[in-house]
Image (tube, rainbow, N blue to C red; front, side, top):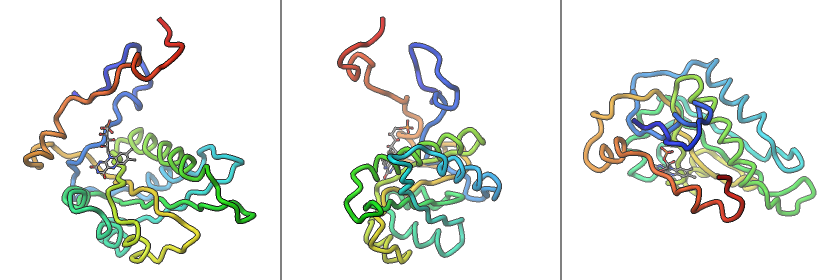
Length: 191
Ligand SMILES: Cc1cc2nc3c(=O)[nH]c(=O)nc-3n(C[C@H](O)[C@H](O)[C@H](O)COP(=O)(O)O)c2cc1C
């Protein structure tokens, strides 16, 4: 139901990936899968191979999980507490010579993208969130000033939608939509 509708077939991990909010609150993420997810992120490309991404990983029930969860907007806390893991991604915003690295957000996004696809490939689900208080996260986790908190990724096991209610349930089961290619390819769309 949530599979992407595409004009031609694309990789099944890309077509089937989506960002659910109904997660199994008892499911654990095996260490080996978490390691693979982090390896996928580690091997992302980045400008000048700068690798500005840094990860803070909380497994449900541990202190880091609680500290990351506490920094989330209340809407996100409402579903993300069932995550098996919460990964806060922070980026080094300067280059080794101390000048600003204008690519660090782009690079972090690429690492998260690889993380997300490895997660789904392994049968788990990932849901990215920028609905969090970066200052609170920095305080809770002791994040140093050389880093900027960029995004929190919930990783877990999908559960039946019915455990959600109201608007959250409606969003969970709504058909996934995207702009048409003709709207986003401004020149050169193939026939
Ligand atoms: C940078 C970014 C920030 C997002 N922040 C939130 C968030 O704070 N809360 C939330 O529930 N979903 C969040 N999402 C999920 C998006 O709403 C979701 O990816 C989008 O609606 C497309 O749905 P799909 O991922 O299922 O295809 C975020 C996604 C991205 C990429």
